[in-house]
Each structure stands twice: as structure tokens, then as C-alpha cells.
Image (cartoon, rainbow, N blue to C red; front, side):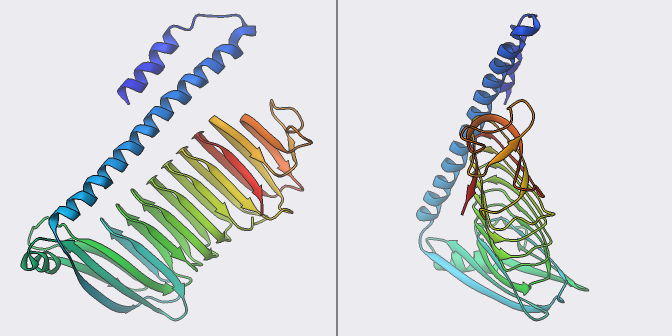
Length: 324
């Protein structure tokens, strides 16, 4: 970041005072500099993540055979209860269903050249489930002050109306059939949310793609540092959808008759809409082709009668609004 900041500052220092007519040219130059710097940063992050994951895979291979241990527990949560989960390494799958209980299955996994050492590492990693009134928290902690080489893969079912607060540091996350409020922080891994009607959906992702499939919600917020963001489903007339990524594409795939107001922007990429848009701002009254087509930069527009609010942004990638 120090190098990128230097690029930006040094470039700014060498831009002289100019007449108003030339300001647009300098603005475009600055935009290109910022775009290139952000692209460099995002590409560097991708390389770091890929290299780290390759090292982790190689380390697992070098450690020998795989050993596993399963943990199962059922606790009463309530139809509108709250579940918190913190996982440092491993996958997470949470599904909504009927009833009042949360059913937790956690599979601990490690590798070791010695079975005794591997089993000891599994035993030393404790799955902690803390129960409160209409609330549970789940985490895995190494015991006796030991560092852990164990990953934990969770499969959890909860009442569909339960709210979730999930943090996963390394591993994929899949959420299904949820109707409560959902907050998720994913640091490394893909995220899939499908087939639910959450009251609100708030996702922060550092590295990995985010896919929202057949999700119906009035409030959807996704912030990604590196990865594509895709929303596929119906837009609520009163909904607000904020989808942002630093490096990657943002795509909304929805019904051809959808009505929405759009704010979309990209530093390095195109904005492409299958919908006829009545545009405002500095881009005239329509996109190329009678309101459809491709435009670079930032647009504001209305499709059909308006209604849902779409705020779509990528610093290095395309914005696509697609009819299904």
C-alpha cells in the first residue's frame, strides 16, 4: 500500500493548475492512475491468498494421513433464536428448517505422520457450545494452551426464523433456507446463500466469490475485497441492494419485468444492462441502443417504474444487470 500511495501522491503533485476546459482530461488521468493502483493491490492480494492456500495444502500433504473425530449436539434454540459461530479453519453449512432445536454436527480433521499424535490433536480441540435463553454460541478452541492444526467442518440445522452471526476465517460457507437476520464475515473462502427469505443479509468477504441464489430480502449488503459478487433472484419493490467489490465483477440476474432504481459505477470496467434505463446525471437520457447496452464509468437510472434500490460498484471489474 505504501507503493500505491506513493504512486497516487507523486502523480497528483505533478498535475499543474489548468483551465477549466482541461480539468476533465486531468480527472480522467487521475481515475486511470487510481484504477491501476487498485488493480495492482487486488492482484497482489489474490496472489498472496493463492500462495498461502497452496502452502497449506502442501503442509497437509506433508503431515501424513488424515484423522477425523465427530462431535454432535442438539440444543433448544427457539423459532426466533440467535446463533453465533466462530470458526478459524474449515467449512460451514447452515440450513433453516422446522422445530425449535439447533442440531450441530462438527467434524474435526487433522493430518499427522503418527496416529497417536493425530488423535491427541483432535482430542485437544474442544467444541464449545454456550447456551443462553434463545441463544447459543459455538466455537472450537485448543485445550491446555496448545496451538491447533485441526480444522473443523460444521453442518448445522436451525429453525428457519433464527438469526445468525457467523465468522469464518478460512473455508467455504453455505447458508440455505433462512428467514431471520444474517450477518457473515468470511476472510478466505467462497460464500453461497440460497433459497431463503432473510429479513436482512449482511456479508463481508475478504477473499472469495459471493453468490446469492433465489434469495428474497428487503435488505442485502455485500462488501468484498477480492472476488465476484452475484445476486440471482427477485427484487423486492421496497428492497435495497448494495453490492460492492474491489476486484471482481458484480452481477444482478433478475426477472425481465423487474422495476428498480440503479446506481452503478466502476473505475476499470463496463456497466452493462439488459434493461432499458432512463438515465440521469452526466450520461444523457439513455444507454446505447435505446436504453440498453454498455457504458463505462458511473450511471444513475430507472428501469420500468422504479422501486427497488440497486447500488452496484466495482473498482476493478464489470457491472452487469441481466434478465433471466
